[in-house]
Structure formats: structure tokens, C-alpha cells
Length: 414
Image (cartoon, rainbow, N blue to C red):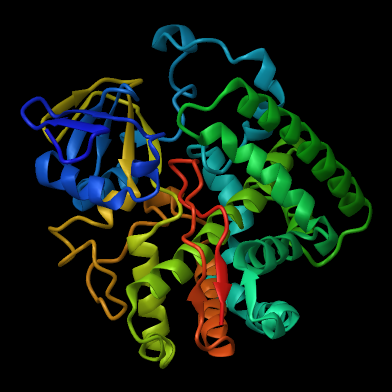
């Protein structure tokens, strides 16, 4: 049993019943993760019909374990696995996702990632520091005199989408449209999504793909110094990316390149202000800033779950898995493992323990992690320096989009 009305834990069988759409859970999942760590860090989630891992060492190892993968249909048929045929009403979404970096396995994953990776290595990304700083300062200039703002729409939404769009070669003016497509798109990853969510995702996937196709045609004719031109005109072992691969890769970079960072800016500002700790030491120097940012990523990660397919029979933590089984890794819970982190539910900006797993690990480690970290390390200190006395004016509401974690809005004053 548990102290939460929406949660039932049987530690003997490791069976858990948990309603992920209960606001009391998705608004603050950390206490539930703590209860799972205490009772059964590896558990079968009845509603999801799947095994879940929350232990840091298990999650870290499984992210790197090549006996598990992000796809299964490269080694088995739908018929063998008893999988239904793809739904007709999400055909556009499935087409746009067909070559997603997030879901491919080697050798396709290696080829795509090699072509894209150069743009995201730290030394390349760090050159964007002046641009990110100027953009953030310009946005703060726009609302500083008002004494208040809704931070997501005036700041957090704009910076990540603008920077990833500029890297790829998409004009700033497309920012709000990209956000709309992306919000619809990630609806497909929610637990208990509705038919309306699926229809919106499919419609936006088609519009998104059509737009990217038109930009690809422009760059084929007139290459520029941007990532899309690089992906179009660079070969890897004699092969160029196909049109479909270019579309999938561009969409995943745009979505992954901003959605989580938008959430994380809001989550970080909230957790820092809610802590009641003095702000100045958190950003006193570069080392302090890095630690503060990493601690916000640990305690309020923007993406909670990463799923894997079992590619061959294997036993993990006493559980036998067969080929075609799916398992889920709760990254956000691994970040709270009491075996790794002292007093894990407490925000400690000077914490120096195990690295957080918020960006994953292994071959699917988030390609945009250097960009996301750079953005957070620049914009968080800037906000608190430019707006002394910053405070939350209305209790923020967390979006009902588990397993993503972000706020509906963040109303601040100073």
C-alpha cells in the first residue's frame, strides 16, 4: 500500500497501479518516485502493461545495453510480435517519424547521427554564446519595465526554438508556427492520448513535413551555411540522406531541440524560487552556475520516460524478458535514487554527486545536450541578475502531458 490514493504498490509481486493522469501525480511525481524507490525500484505498471526501471544503475546500464534498442521491426515482423498494423489516421505522423534519430538503430542511426553530430559538439555550439545572450537580453528589455511577465510566452518559448531554427536554417518568423506543430506532435507521446490528440498530431506532421520539404528544395538550389544545407550536400561513406531522412531528421531536431528546453527553463526558475535559497551564490561564478543548472536538471527533468525494445532474451533484476518485450526507463526517477543522491528530493544547488540522466546515455544520448546546457547556463543567471527580487505571483500549473514535465505558464513579478 502507499500514502497516495492514486497509487497501489505490492512490493512482493512488484506490481504497481498508478493513474498517470491524476493531477496529484503528474504535478509532483517526485514523492511517488521516492515511494517506488523505497518499495520496488523495478516494477510492473499495471495500467501501462509494462516493466519500469527507476534505479540509477539499472537505468544507466539499460540505456547503454545493446541487447535493447529503440526499434524492433528491423529484426522481427509485426506478425511475429503480435503487433497491430499502423493506424491509417496517423499515416502522416508515422511517415514523418520513419527515420527519426530517436528511434533508429545502427547502421542507419550511425549514418544519420554522424552527419548531424558535428553541428552539436560543444566547441561548435559555444560559438553561439553571444547570439543566445543578445536574444535573451533583448527579450528581457521588452518586459523589464513592466515589473511582471508570463515567462514561458515572453522568454522560455522563444529562445530554444529561435536558436535551433537558426542552426538548421529556418527563419525566426516561423517560431510560433514551429511551436504549434511541435506541441501537437508531442501529443502522440502522452499516456492515454485521445483520438483528437492523434488527429492533431497527424495534421501537424503533414504540415510540418510539407514545410520542411519546401525548405529542402530551396537549399538544394541555393545552399547556405546552415545545418540543413550541410545535411543535404554532405555524404557519409558515399551516401547522401534521402528526402524522407532529411524530413524526419529536421523535424526531430526542431522538436527535441526546443520542447524540453522550454520546459526546463520554466521548471528551473520555479524550483530555484520555490527553494527560498539565496540566489547570488547559485550563479556566483561559472562553476556555481553549472552545478545549479545540473541540479535543476536532476530534480525536475523535462522528459521522464525513455522506452526500449528487448532485442534478445535477457534477465534484468530477476525479471526475464523475451525478444519483442518493451521496457521503460524513468530517467527522472533515476535522478532521485537514494543510493546515488543524499536527500534526493531536496534541491541543493551545490550538490556534487553522480551525473543526472536527464539527457539519457549511450548511443541515443541527447544530441542537443550541449546546446540545451549552454542555453540554460546563459539565460538562468541573466534572468536573475537582470530582474532582482524575482518572485512567483500565481502557483504554476503543471501541464497534463505526463511523461513530459513542464508548466502551463509561469507568472513572475519583481
